[in-house]
Image 1 (cartoon, rainbow, N blue to C red):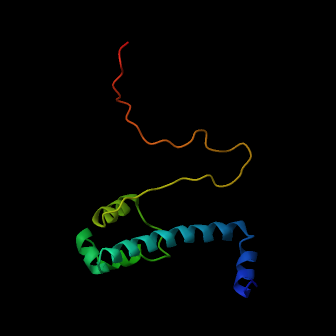
Image 2 (spheres, rainbow, N blue to C red; image 1 turned 120 degrees about the vertical axis):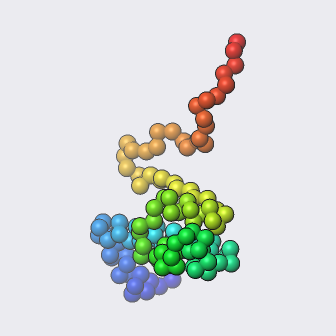
Image 3 (spheres, rainbow, N blue to C red; image 1 turned 90 degrees about the vertical axis):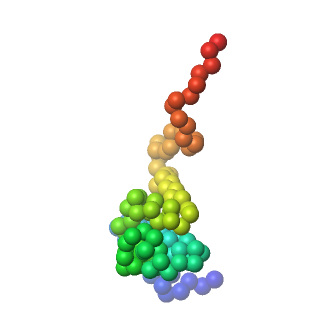
Length: 120
């Protein structure tokens, strides 16, 4: 498939580390915005309806669903998720293949430290 002029331009721009980082961050904000909007629509709610349930303004919901907005707080995302019967899940991933750096242990589910010990 032939690359478009935009594809060529973007490929060239992504060579700049500063641009690449901003581009990646914008993609993450876009993902959050799209997920909120999709969950709201699946619930059959308008932005105004969701705002009422969250005791906030329709403008705030519009802001949360805007791909350019990067001010999502964890507490706000939790409130939105609760009202939309969803959960928030945050995943930290290695940034790349940096020599000598990596996750020391595989991820494991959280377990309480208050386990009952068997006496032998």
